[in-house]
Every structure is written in structure tokens, then in C-alpha cells.
Length: 326
Ligand SMILES: [Zn+2]
Image (cartoon, rainbow, N blue to C red; front, side):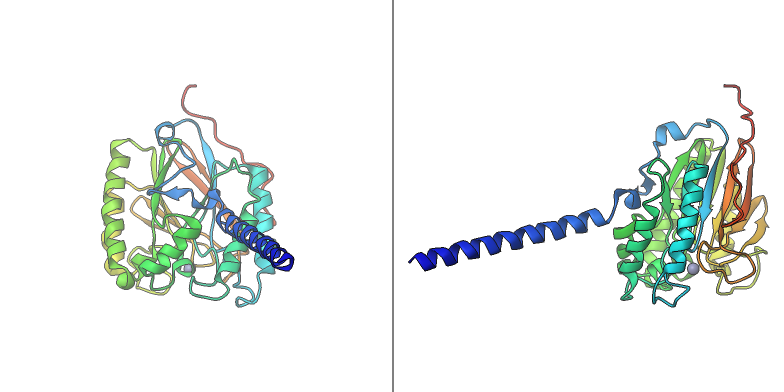
């Protein structure tokens, strides 16, 4: 009898410890996705107050990063080089203190169905958690983040880790629109996502115009084109069949510039007044441009931008005098 009670107590203790261990594992799982990485929700970005931010305040600058692509240097065997480069980038971010940072896709090298995907996502989030919490970090999905032929499932997997795949947000009078360009590149796996994004984009561009945005800026992973708006289709641009009508719409809406990555080197072109700015990688370069990022200065009537190599970043960013009386 006594032995039975003793056994029951032991079983009770074991059960309690197991429950506690499970609770800890669940807590860890829920805290793994930090709120800062899922700020893109309900097609907007929570860190920015839409009421306040629709009004022009003063010149500001932001930093555009692309292709951190954890795992690319080593073919998914590790990510030491990407970690070191991101550590440098984060130091620059915390020193320069931009209004926000945007990472234009291919956050990881592995796609969601790959065995190394979660490890790369965790490392990305761990490293970028070192960005000062006061500096919003906006993530954009690339073809490695949702696959070359994205599906509803691959997009859902991305959303769990990084929030919405397309959304818009205002910053100091500027309307910023983020698109899922992988469905523009190949919509065959999720045609309904491209259709929904297009309907949504129509409304965003109309709203931006009605709200008298100082600038409309677009961000996506794939460049619409590298240097000529009518250049032939290739791996790094969006097929003409979808590029031409979209460009027409963006010109009509007076979009000031589109920022992209994917090319792992810099490229530049114009479509009417719209600049198509392709930015080199934080991670592995594929051309002569070294790892780095772009700094974009936004003034009331114009924007200026420059790519900086990671080991040649200015100490401080000089902003133009505000042209608006205080
Ligand atoms: Zn890419």
C-alpha cells in the first residue's frame, strides 16, 4: 500500500515536470516569432500611425537592404559570413538611426520546404533583433522566402514568420507600398493572390493620390526591369506581359521610385519619371558591387539615394534643411 502511494507520488511529479517542460517549449515557440517581425498585418505596418504619418513633417532618410540570404555563401551548410555581414549592417543602422529599415527579400537562402529553412529564419531574426527597437524593420518577401513558384502554403509559411506578403504604410507624408513580386514573376501556383494584390494595389494608388502623398514609393524583391523598361524577359526581371501594364499604371499614379534587390548587384533605369532602383546584396555579391546597402534621403520634392559598401559607410547622414516653415 505504502509502495503504491510512493509510486503514485513519483508518477505525479513526473507528470508535473512533463507538463512544465511542455509549457516551456510552447512559451519558447510563441516567443520565437518576435512581434517586431510580424508588424506587417492587415495589409499595413503597425509601427507607423497612419493618421500622423500621412502629413509631411521634415526630411528624413531610410536604409534599404536586400538579399541577406542566410546560407548562400555556403550552399546552406552554415551562415557564418552572412551573420558577420548582418552584424556590420546592424551596427551601421544603430549608429545612423534611419527613420526605418527595409529588407527587400531573400531573407534566407533556403525556401520554406527546405530542411535548413527554420534555422536560417531563426538566425536572421536573432541577428536583426539587435536593431534598436525604436527603428522599425520592414521585411519584404523574395523568391527564396516563398519559392520560385509561390503557393498559398508557401506564402502562409512566410506570413507566420514575417507577417503580410504585401502591405502599405505611410511615413512622414510618403506612401510606401510593398508588393509580393514572386507572384508577378510566376503567378501559376497562386493566381488568386496576384489578382487580390492587383485589386488592392489599385485602391492603394488611388488613396495615395487622394491623400496628396508627397511621394509614392514601391518596394519589392524582383526589379520590374534592370535598365530598360522594355528589355527582354530574363531571370532577373518581371515578364513583359505583366511588366508593361503595371508600369503604365505606376506612371499614371506618379510613382516616384521602385526599390528592389534579387540581382545581387546594383542596377538603374527609368520608366518616364519613375526610377527603377536595384540594390546590391547585404549577403553574397554576384558582380563587382561589394556587400552593402542603400541610403535614401527623402525631401519634400525629391529623393536622393546612394549605395554604400559595408566597410565604407559614412559616419553621419546630413539631411537637407526643411523647406517647410516650422
Ligand atoms: Zn531573389
